[in-house]
Length: 219
Image 1: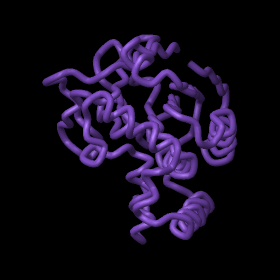
Image 2: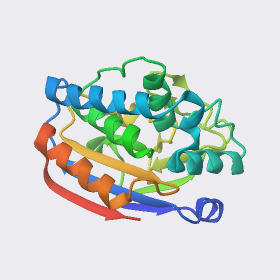
Image 3: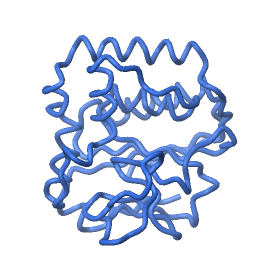
């Protein structure tokens, strides 16, 4: 699997780096041990940030700046990592979905990076391209319905859009039946070292999702 970053993204965000993790996994209902890790991390973030400080975290700032340069309002279309942090700082728990989705949310919240999580078997072709959403491009955000992706950084496979830093697409979403994971860590500007975020993700996948045949690339 290759990730191609289109020139418009490279020019708008020269520092962009994408960490790609693919693995065979066993998904499940979120175990209590993982949920306890998430609760502990949520409390740390709640204790460390005021609501107005979240969008000043380096990784979130970089992602928001990319949105602005592409003409998208980052307050209306919030980056997923920012949305997660805002939720916990407001004193709300994260949604408990399943092991894979919840561990991705844990890494995203703590690293500041938006992270795409996909069922690798639902991705069409062997290349994913990161470009910019077009006018009237159809994209059904998970739990959001049709999302206006015009001006958003957008991943596409051979069949169309699969994910953005705001929301992933219903077509390629992770379910309890997912056995092959594709995880894309979007480092538009560094906060947690990308290698650390990748290594932590793999450790969580091995611990909680019995990850095997793990492959890593950085683009």
